[in-house]
Length: 244
Ligand code: FES
Image 1 (cartoon, rainbow, N blue to C red):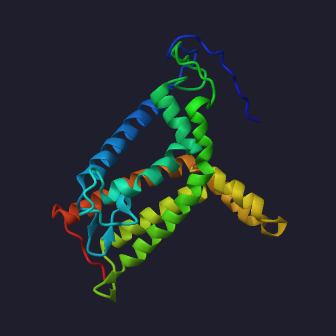
Image 2 (cartoon, rainbow, N blue to C red):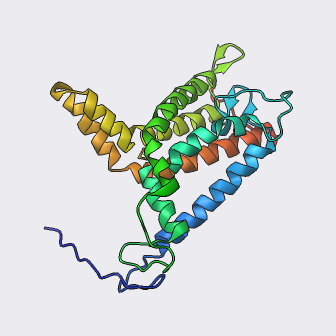
Image 3 (tube, protein in one colour):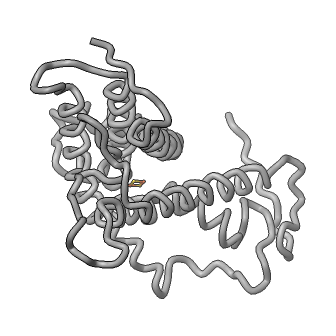
């Protein structure tokens, strides 16, 4: 039987009786999310190199040409990014990670928070976090679009074919699907709409949910790397290789 030891919380930011490296997780989260946000903002405002041949970057999918609208800061990426960003911002697993890394109230279990940063639950503006289920519906629509992008990546001058980029997009779609289907709100939905006869579906989703945080990080990294790949070949910094 697992023994759970509860340490008392010590007052003062970072004060604790813990002897492990508790600060590693919030620090890595802080650095990883900062890199991702800065990169996504740069790409959103760059306004170009979102497509190459049959490939579309996931940062601008579904792809809409915005040139000619004359709206400042409107790019194919700024048009669509708010939806997946809201889905991530309201995700239970990501919330825990960025609350700890950025607000440090507290930065980890049994570690003191800053005196002014007393945790009061998700009140005031944070009540918007309950909108997560609605962002899930939008994320499911986006997921269909991303799989359509993958299907398009197999069409080369109206012929069936595949390049390394198709494989990169496939991995990204798979990780994003696993992340979306491991969502706690999705599990709740499946539980509501599947009866006892389809209980195995709910149990399968529940198994996936156990890895939700890990899938969140893996899919975030794959979105970034897929965009880097598409941008690299679109700008001529790298070459795509046709597999067949
Ligand atoms: Fe993380 Fe829904 S709980 S995406």
